[in-house]
Image 1: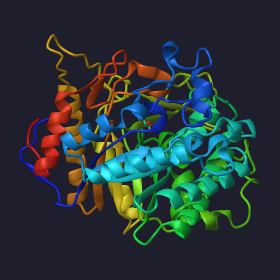
Image 2: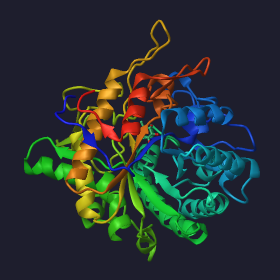
Image 3: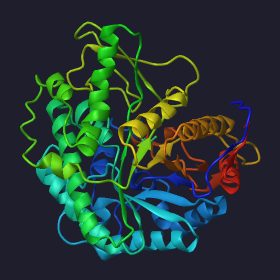
Image 4: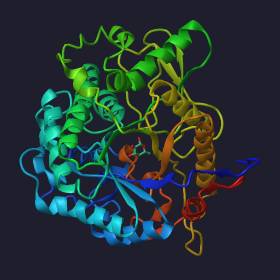
Amino acid sequence: MTESHTRTFPPDFVWGSATASYQIEGGVREGGRTPSIWDTFSHTPGKVLAGDTGDVACDHYHRVTEDLDLMAGLGLNAYRFSVSWSRVQPTGRGPAVQSGLDFYRDLADGLLERGITPVLTLYHWDLPQELEDAGGWPERETALRFADYAHLVGEALGDRVQMWTTLNEPWCSSSLGYGSGVHAPGRTEPESVLRSAHHLNLGHGLATQALRSVLPAGGQVSITLNPAAVRPRSDSAADVNAARRIDALQNRIYTGPLLQGAYPEDLLQDTARVSDWSFVKDGDTRIIHQPLDSLGINYYCPTLVSATAPGKAATRNDGHGASAHSPWVACDDIEFHQYPGPLTEMGWSIDPTGLTELLMRFHREAPGLPLYITENGAAFDDKPDANGAVHDPDRISYVHGHLAAVHQAMEQGADVRGYFLWSLLDNFEWAYGYSKRFGMVHVDFDSLQRTPKSSAQWYSGVIKNGELPAQV
Ligand code: FCB
């Protein structure tokens, strides 16, 4: 991408990178950890490409010091990681185990010693299997369990971690986990999509209360969403209505109760033939509607939809894996389209304008709420050359374009405080296993050797200068 001018970011802009527990840790049977839904799912034949599992992943559990030094070498200001629930509270109930808490306490200390701010996510999709066996997120009880777990972790780590995120992308947990079934636990039950979305929202609200009761002054609580930048394929009334319905199911089902304290009327009507929403109890939306210190936004590509005849919608590969079941409730008359033009290795279109669009939307709809890009990045088929170096100009260009899009939104008034590149390391990309590489650091999954790619050097320069060069 060519731009005519250098873009300077504010001196206190947070430059980070992100990972998630199941995608990098390995060590799945150590320190008393019990299986999560992703252990079970990845060990179920046919669920993950090539039968890959997170048993070893990047072996981060045993290589924390090396990874911390890597981050320090790149000059990161912040590191967003997630806690494996069943590592600190095996089975999802009862007291925390010390070894689990110690692992994350040491990680936080290692970050602080290197001048890197720890940004902790409590839940990045790895529900303890025992809680799924008891019904999982479609059951209200899971939200109560989540609040207890938040309390335990908050109490143990609140003295060294200031930035807390309750959930990562609840849309994926509910719609891919219980709708299309391409993610753990792999259930395909339309009403469970809505029930789990509500209980994730409730879990967020209860966990926020729990965190606020234990965190010292200065503790900040956030949630990370993956809002869709959804666009109708034409301006026909039918296509515009299709976009409205998808916006309700991916965006407003979360932002409604979180930011406004109510589920949108149109969402309730659109989904009435699947559920009467009687699982929403009196007072729930008040619990969900807690003040937030910031909002995390994960963005990869925009969503393009059109209306079609009922039942005609093609089976959709939503970018996280193909399924005969839809993650979209009551939407068999809506079709999804791929944008023409450059695509990443995931088949996701490269279009930074969607990011500016989303940031401006939140700027308008949630005035005064600081925003962070908690994930943005791209998979490409990166391979070491004869000298072992890994050159990834496509990733540099992708990140360049998206950072410019963030900067544009900031110029128009959006209060964006930081950017976390997904991901630090190549890792276990859910249903795609190790076949998709998102890291700015290459991982050889046989030797587990880490090699910073050219994008890591480039990003490091951006961080050092606080400036996006005009050209990549
Ligand atoms: C997001 C997930 C993250 C990673 C990226 C590519 O939806 O939060 O774990 O898989 O997609």
